[in-house]
Image 1 (cartoon, rainbow, N blue to C red):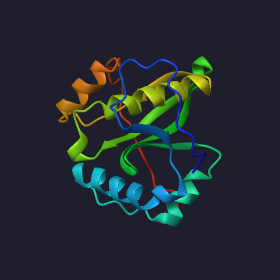
Image 2: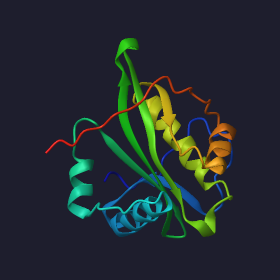
Image 3: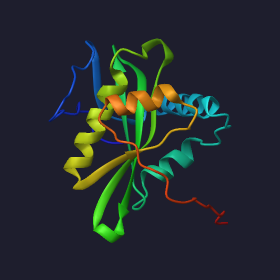
Length: 167
């Protein structure tokens, strides 16, 4: 987890809510992050198995890379974005995926999610990414509307995705 300095938004589309700072995650945020990751997993009907050693391992990986940023309100972490790096090899383009976006229920609808997305966009740009992606469940209409309002465009699915355990 990185520096403690707030992130400077180079292209804010909206004002960050008063008293809220968007900054890189710090070691002191670990408990709040693990709790929010668990809450997001439960929202999607999953049981998170992530623990602190696994989180540290992910943060130290070279590829795929992970960046965590948080929204802090009066000293309390109230939201986060988990960003992973990827690419569109056929175009020689680096891509950042907004893999997780979570705002504490009491602070939803206040612009914090948008501020996290704006900060993620600026990070993607500073790291030379040509695109930022996000996905959501087909039933999560509220998230779809929010992503459209933030400037994302729908991408038609052209095929199926597959996965296999690597053990």
